[in-house]
Each structure stands twice: as structure tokens, then as C-alpha cells.
Image (cartoon, rainbow, N blue to C red; front, side, top):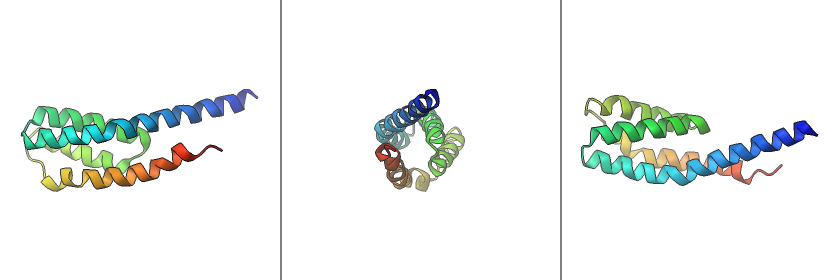
Length: 106
């Protein structure tokens, strides 16, 4: 019985992490875009770092890699616009994949 309880706790934790990620990421993407438009490299690097970490936590590897590149290149002020332009599409794919985690109630 204890194992079952632990299994459900882990599942609840995973759902909470995913839900939080899905709630916070759209705002972070907007902030990232604004920081880029304003050429605020300090904010850009900070937001990209945070988003990279949270994306790694939920297994969004492609999004995390894009954020890693933004973080790395942003410190030097040399970011390819395509990196930032592609983030919403990358996030959309992640959102779709993570939706199943929230729906799964087995």
C-alpha cells in the first residue's frame, strides 16, 4: 500500500511541475521577446537560463537547447533572430506533448 501511495505522490508532483511549467512559460517567452527587442542582453540571458532549466526539468530538450544557445550568445549580444522566432513553435510542441501528462489519470 505504501508503494502505491508513493507512486501517486510522484505522479501528483509531476503533474504540479508540468502545470506550473505550462502556466509560466508563455509569460517567459513574451519577456524573452521583449528583452530581445529592447536589446537587453542581461534580461535575455537571465530569462533564457531560467527557461532552459525549467524546460530540462520537464524533458523539453529542443526548447532547452534553444534557450542554452540564446543564453550563450546573448551574453555577447549575438543572437540569431530565428532562435527566438522559433521558440513559440517549439513551446507549442512541448505543450501538446505535456498535455497527456495532465490528462493521464491511470
